[in-house]
Length: 328
Image 1 (cartoon, helix red, strand yellow):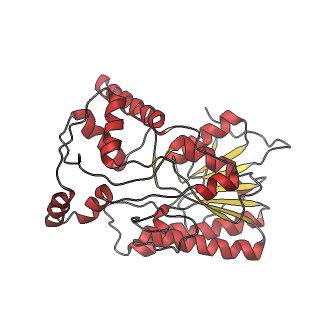
Image 2 (spheres, rainbow, N blue to C red):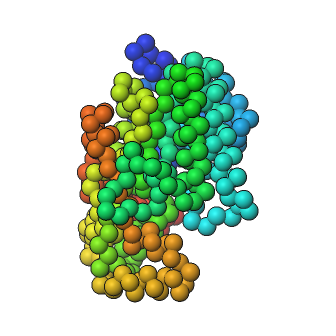
């Protein structure tokens, strides 16, 4: 069982928000393995090694959890969802992703925190790339409430950092995958595992993704690296693939052959438009790439895990969960 490790002289003590989430769980496991002290915070269902902070908003009290911490890694957020149900989606995102973030930053500074590592999103840059990948130097162009709220949080944090002197590091991940991944990546694995014919054999786009292990490694590095403050970092596996290639990689990990039909992408787009699914089709057919040159050069960092290796690990976890559910 994880536990909060006592502060050691040569180490930073890190406050992790969203510690029970997909990325947060992996971060806590990695910190434990590396012997780095941390405090794990969650909204609810607290265990002996966690602080329960309740709902995230502009009034959340972080003082007890922040005691003795030098760094905050802020993972908790109102995440992007495919089918938004809030009547005023932008206000709902702002309450958690902007107001709650700034409330945490102010309390962190009051408690002596030196560095704030903020996990943002590639959606701050936009939804799709054309002739070149997104970089941290590009003019932001978010198109949905989630992306807008993340950009607003970045901007507010940057102003606060300038005025307070607290160090700020911003990281913009694309799609994150790994053991336990859900949503669209999990759906693709299910379709390949079931041998469902997919009309995606002709799709020749390019998508950047980041394996959970690679993202966690970069996040932990940004908590202590001397060149990280004041920077915005893009992150990926540094190996962009088309959707059809991704399906082949998933199938390979399962010991299968993918059932891909070579249907013109224009036909797929037209059919999606008729069904009112153009947004979903754009995510499958379009390109979204990030350039991590700045990240690699500034931090002397590179992805630690290769993409096929990470997919193999993800698929193994997925198949294990299927087996476990069948046994039950």
